Image (cartoon, rainbow, N blue to C red; front, side, top):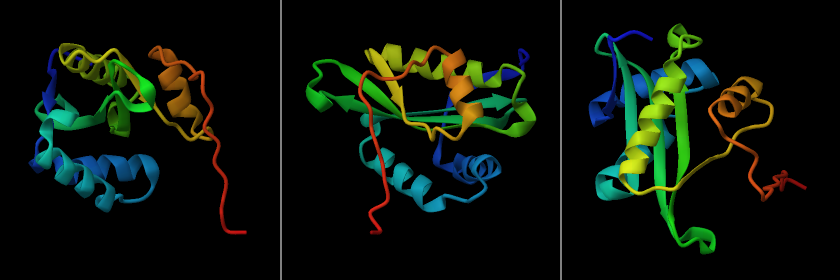
Length: 149
């Protein structure tokens, strides 16, 4: 990315662009998910960190993290990455790394010691990106299965 990029807090005005970027990446519009996250953030802003990567003033990526205070018996503050996306037009140019670095800087300023994420194991591109940014497989396993039978 160039000097024309910056990390900024996301605002409610960014909602439609976040949804559009996410749809390009996931194939479906998850408006309900993002609207619920926005409502929760507006209600308890201290529990969330939402940042955007702007290129030439236009939103090119987003990262949404929720702060966890002592969950699972932990004494420190950690964060869970709820959503992360970079517009395909800006991928493979360092945008994702710049966005992750910006998110981590804000989290560090808030005293967060760990950042976790859940990833669909079939999403090899995202798994590769997370591996390249220093994520590692957690020491605990979460298994999922259908409950339809």
